[in-house]
Every structure is written in structure tokens, then in C-alpha cells.
Image 1 (cartoon, rainbow, N blue to C red):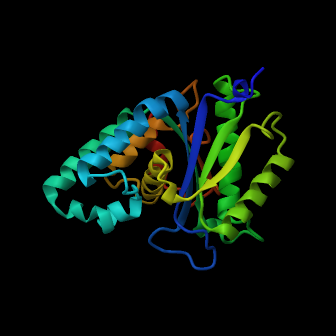
Image 2: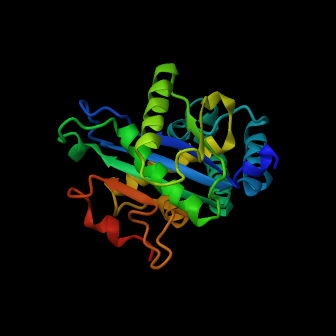
Length: 264
């Protein structure tokens, strides 16, 4: 058997929205969201990558720009072109088309820091978000015939110390898990945004709309409407809660409207 026979059919990209501080909580965005975007490899390299590169060449003349949610939202740096309303409308139409037509599954963890910060000796939000997310990604892989396969897990690099801390947390999760088969499934990687991986950039675009919808459930959010259909769901009833989105802590304050809007 060749080594290639061990390779799984999927690749997972991970990015976050919000900061991890529990001491100084941003009242405008008091949550931490960690999103895992699961792509089937053949679809990723045959559709997602070329379509994203085509978008970049068409709007920037090269594939150098990196799609970054914050810069797009604030129209900074390469995305100053979005100040032009005609360009902006055309750009978002193309980007939304890619995000809608691309086939991927989202598993996301949302930590409500307003509640979580009051816990005794709370864990780092990134670490607990990673644990909840990894468990659900593992379940997804089991459901899709990946038992015994190697799955690349690509986190965005946040600096040498942060990457080392995440690796330590990842190893600890694998050591204590009771899920048979999870240790050894994931190939851990931390990759710089500068590597310009298209999957990592799409993961970056996914996280914030989830947090925004949680905080403002009645506010129009076109991105949420699109992304909610991509989330892992309960196969029997289509519910996303606990499957594609783990909210922690689960008790109040959780806006009631948030749950009423889940697609059934």
C-alpha cells in the first residue's frame, strides 16, 4: 500500500473572528468565533481555487491580493477599489457567487465572552473553540467514510508563540479525547496568511457573519443567509445547533430569535 492510500478526500481550513481577551471585552463584538471550513479536495482544486484566482486577476490584475474580511469590510489597502459603487457591486456579486456555488461544510464554535469570562479559571477561547470544533469535524469525517484517513487541518498562523501554544492545545485535545480514531486523523499545520491559500481566505470570510448574526439576529445579514445553508446539520431534522454551530456557554444570554431562524 502506498502512502497516498492514507490520504483522505477532504482538507479543512480554520480561521477566527474576534479576539481571545477575557479581561478587556469589546462591547461591539463580545464574541470569539472559530470556523472550520471542510472542502472535498477535488472540488477545492478544480473549482474553488481557479474561481478565486480568476476573481483576483479580474479585479486586481494579479493573484497577489489576499482576501481578508476586515480589509474588504473597511475597504482598505488593495480593497480601496471597493469605494467605487459599480466596482463594489460587481466584486461582491462575483465573490458571493463563489461562496454560494462552492461546495463546503462549515463547523463553527462561538464563545460568548460576556458569559464565559465569569467562569472560574476559564480556558483560552481559542483552545476551547478548537476542541468543540475538532470533535464535530471528526464526526463529519466519520460520516463521510474517512475512518483511518489522514486529513490536513490548516490553521492560520498567528505568530511563533501563538502557533506553539495552539499546537500544545491541539496535542492535549488529542491525548484526552475519548473519540476512538480522532488521534492520528488530523495533520496539523499553521500557515501564514501570506502563503495566499484560497481555502484559508474563504475561512476568514466565513467567521464574522456568524458572530454578527448571533449578536444582531433580526438585522439583515445576506452573508448569514448564504452561510447557514453550508453548515453541518442534523441529518434527521436539519438543525444546525450543536452540529454546525456550537454556542458556548449555552445558557442565557442567547437571543431567542437566533434559534428561530435556523433553517429546518
